[in-house]
Length: 338
Image (cartoon, rainbow, N blue to C red; front, side, top):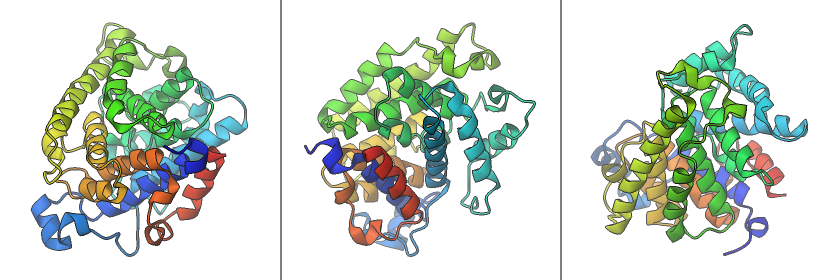
């Protein structure tokens, strides 16, 4: 395995997630049979022309810009909420926000504009949609963060829109997976390490980052609140482990780990698509995009994992050079790779 610095994990992950997003954009909401009828065998799928992305990549960039602003001011802390909030509002107002964005993000971002409202009141406490963790990869790519910073930032960026404890836990776990892969963890070790991380953090509520968010739920206390999320993540890791014991590369990954509309399923199905083809990143993207569920988000996550693991050079230049927002993705990646 090459080192993080030489493989440019951050650039690889950001380009990979955008490529997966673009590949899955035209296949979302379609059955596998209708996808293959339209685009041919899944292993031969081509990047669309033009290579447009969805809100998944747009919100990843918004989060990345907000984090960059926060860190320009000093050590990353809970006050990142303000620059990230501003970037989410700017995304919501942008005329380019026309890629079928999720209702939770739209509702929350509209509420985030109200100066009289704490961000915790804008958070959609009942939503665990995959919008929480489709965009979280930057948190796993920023160098030099402590475990507490990374977990707190991953959960806080989720909570600005998706406040369900499973959205928080899945975002934390997704960022942790990206970080592990960027730092050379072998794919065969990944799921076990994620399970250990989930078990260790099961009752840890990051009050410094989340404030009193939990009080918007019906839970008797913060530990009970966050444990619900980690328990759902542990359950989906069970399904992921079972799928990897009897791998079925030609089958839709959604059959094993869910269609990805919700956070924990998007994480697991993105991971499954990557782990089935850990050394064939383009094949992993194609497998993720040819799915019956939330294909763009599943492929976006698969690309983030594959790019973090293998680096920037694994993506075909003909694809990487024409992906939408290529300049912004490379600029952020270069910052964190340095």
